[in-house]
Each structure stands twice: as structure tokens, then as C-alpha cells.
Length: 218
Length: 376
Ligand SMILES: Nc1ncnc2c1ncn2[C@@H]1O[C@H](COP(=O)(O)OP(=O)(O)OP(=O)(O)O)[C@@H](O)[C@H]1O
Ligand SMILES: [Mg+2]
Image (tube, rainbow over all chains, first blue to last red; front, side):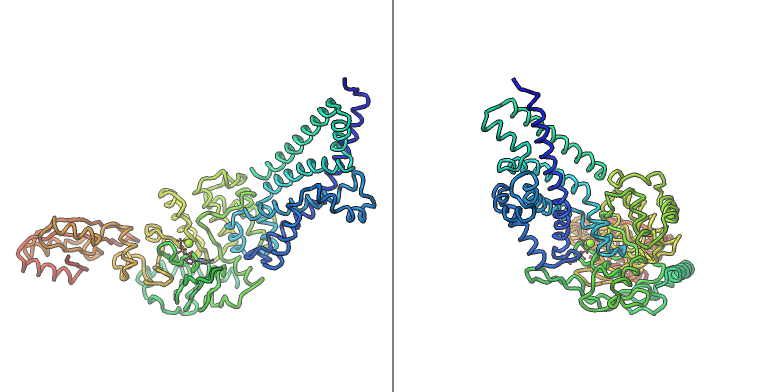
């Protein structure tokens, strides 16, 4: 039988740690990733800041991080994490690698969301005499807003996923708890509870993301 | 460029057009550089070459000379790839010529960049085949965009937008998103947006090509009233002869980047001088016979066969029957038709002639003195 008296507070603490890591990493990733994605788009040849060299470099940077499995990135970034956070263990230490992985993901999907905007809208904006930055933000980003929100939702769910990996190497959170109870103590009841909490969490995030995006898409 | 003065100049000259009618306007010789003051848009020796990444070059425009008068509706017609869009986009400098000059109201666009270019564009509206509306904004929001760009206050914007919505007949659709509109309604929004800033020039790139014939008629009528009510000079690009015939005062025919013919619409329709024009007119009217059809019909009608171009001289007067009676020639109709464009008849009749050979010769000679007659 599950000893709710001791298990529930543990799961609750772990959930808060996960939420803390995901929220902090997501906020940083969103700011960095969206900026990078918009810049990636704007420097494409033929776009308003069209610059083949800058675009190539940015693209290269994003492409370096994208294929690295998160666990390897996490370990590889240990010195960076220690320099920023002061430690490489605990929930806070998971934030830099999560934020970097999230930012690169957001940059890539944001760029493709922006590329998908009807070039006719840009043509109309130019014909109306809009300034380049206005065209970028007032037309292209605005038109892509709904899809961008769905992309952010998608990446935030990948971050929940990645926190579990971070937990495995001492990052805390639900992943860490699942590992201690499920893997080391074979306590399937706690595992089940953690899985249910994760499912509910992911569903809530997806629902919220869809709900907000829908207001912009329809 | 001052909007107010150019708009009133346009209105004045459009009134002049009304009085003199087509005959007055036909004084402009095709391709002749225009007199300053009467022409809004002048292209001189404009060429445009596109170079692809692979290094291949396309001559989209080749030594184009054109002028568009104030208050005029000018048609640009040609087959796909002829360079129509490229030419139209020169007028608001979305496209720059490789050589030659584009002048709008006497200003060479080559020297116009940055803020000056943006201000110029506030005075030139544009409508597109695919409407190019923002899906993230309502109808109201879409029409408000150019007004916001011009720095208008929110209170004035709302008054102006409702005025425009009434003009295009969408008064009840202000807060609907474009995706909920039909194609014709979307184009009405496109037109309202294009004229929101009271431009003096409107560029239309295949505005009706995505629409059914009925809706095309409605949009053509709307563009006409934009021209008549506000004196806006309109340049319409289309591949539909039907659209230019109902809309344009003058047309230029583009083929492979060259203007092969320029003239009054009814002159172009009744007496196309260039084979490309003839082809476009033919596929529009379907009154003329193709060579293949003629070959086939020669077997069926073994006597004398002629094709007669029909215009004012043959319609409403019994010329044909009088000549036939005078020469004791009979005729029957093989194929043909007559339509009216701007109140002038045009068309073609193919006839089989019966009678003595010499009588037929004399009939054809006398008819040929009054109308264009081809024996085949
Ligand atoms: N940006 C570009 N880069 C390369 N080639 C171009 C470009 N724009 C147009 N062209 C080429 O120039 C030629 C004329 O194109 P344009 O779009 O002006 O034709 P169009 O008459 O408007 O045709 P359509 O009726 O199909 O719209 C075509 O051969 C086209 O492929
Ligand atoms: Mg075109």
C-alpha cells in the first residue's frame, strides 16, 4: 500500500522543483530562442536583414546544439553551469543546460514558423510603405503568432521531458524521485503516482498553449 | 509629392477625358514619351534582367516605353510570364529596372529611397491576385494598417474605415477575420485597404484572376467606381481580355517582355495589329477562325470565303446587304459574332459568297474599301 502521508509531500516537493526548473529554463529559452529565431529568419538571403554570412554562422551554432542528446549536453556543460550557478548539483544547476537546449529548439521552430508566413503579406506591407522592422514585427511575427505559441508549447513540454533526464544526474524534481523510488527501491506505486502527475502536467501545459494560441489563430 | 494636389489634378484630367472621349485620348501615339503634366507614369526604355543563383538570366522586360495619363484606367495584358507583374511592380519600386527610367509625377524613382520611397508608396495603392490580407487581423484591422502607417489618429481611422467599408459594401463585416470571407469579399477588403490613404494611383495585379465570372464582374465594377468617384489613376494587369475590355481606356500588350502594341481598347479589339494581340483577342471573342478551322472549312464551303472585321461602318447600316444586292452576290454566315466595347461594336464575320466570280471580286473590292476583308 502507498503510504500517502510520506509519499504525497515528496511528490509535491518534486513537482515544485520540476516546475521551477521548467519555468525558469523556459523563460530564458523563450527570450533567447525567439530572438535567435527572428534573427535567423531576418538574416536569410532576401529577407530584410539578409546577410548570408551572419545567417550561416547562426545556423551553424543552432545546428551544433540541436543533435546533441540532452544528457550529453548536460554533462558537457558542467563547467559552464558551475561557473554560473556555483554548483553542478540540484534543480538550479539544471537550468543553464535546459535553457540552452530549449533556446536552440525554439530558435529552429520559430524560424520555420516565420518562413511559413505568406510572402504576399510581406509584399503588401512593402507596397504600403512599411519600415523593415515594422514589416518584421508588425506583419511577419504577428501573422506567425498563433503557430509560434504552439511551438513554444511544444518546446516547454520537451523541457518537462528533459528535466527528468536532469533529475537522473542529481537535478532533483520528478525525474529524480522516479529514479530513487522506481529504479532503486522498486516502489511501483510511487512510480504510478509520478507518471500520473506528469501526464496531468503535460496535458495542462498543452491545453493552456492550445487555448492561448487559438485566440490568435481564429 | 503632395497627395491633395495630385489627386485634384487627376480628377480634373479625368473630367477632361469624359468630355473628349476616346477620340481625344487616341491622340497619344503608342510608345511616345509623354508630355510632362498630363502623364502620371512614364516608363522609358525599361529593361529588367533577373539572374538566378545558377547564373542563368531571364529578360523579364525588354526596352519598355509606356505612359499612363492622369485619371486613366490603363490595362496591361499578356500571357503568363510576359512580364506584366514585373512591369507593374516598377511603378511603386518593388522592382527596380536594370536599365531605363520609371517616372511617377515627373519624379525619377531611381533616386527615391528610404523615407521618400515609403511616402511615395503611401500614395500608390496595390491590390493582389491572392488578396495578401493579414489573417491575424480583422477586416477592420486590415483596412486600418495603411492609415496607421500614415500616422492617422485612432478616432479618424475608425471613421475612415467605416466609410471605406460602406464604399466596398462590407459594412457588416468589420470584425470578421478574412478567412471567413469569400474570395470576392476578400478582394473588396483588398481594394478598401489599397485606397484607404486616398492614393492617386492604384495598381492591380490580376485582382480578379482568382474569382468566378460573376464576382469578377462585381470587382470590375468596383474598380470602375474607384476610378470615377475618386479620379484615381488605375493600372490593371490581367491575362483576361474580358476584364480589360470592360475596364481599361487604353491597353498595352506585353509579349516576352516587350510591349508589342499599345492603343485604345476598342481599336485593339477590332483591329489588332500584332499577332500576339490577335491571338489574345481571338481567344477572348472566339469570333475569328483559326488557320486549322479555315483549312477544315475550305472543304465544306467550296465557293468564295471571306472574313470581315466588323466595326461601326457595318453595324446599324445595311452596307452588307446593299453591296450584295448591287453585285448580285449572295452570302451565308460561316461563323462570327459582334459585341460592344465602350459602346462601339467590334467583331468578325466569316462569310461564304455565292455568285459569278467577277461579281464576287467586285463585291469584295468594294466591301474592302470600307472594312477589313480577308479572303481565304
Ligand atoms: N524575382 C525573380 N527572379 C527571377 N526571375 C523572375 C523573378 N520575377 C519574375 N521572373 C521572371 O520574369 C518573367 C516575367 O515574370 P512576371 O511575373 O512579370 O510575369 P507575368 O506576366 O506577371 O506572369 P503571370 O501572368 O504568370 O503572373 C518570368 O519569366 C519570370 O520567371
Ligand atoms: Mg504576374
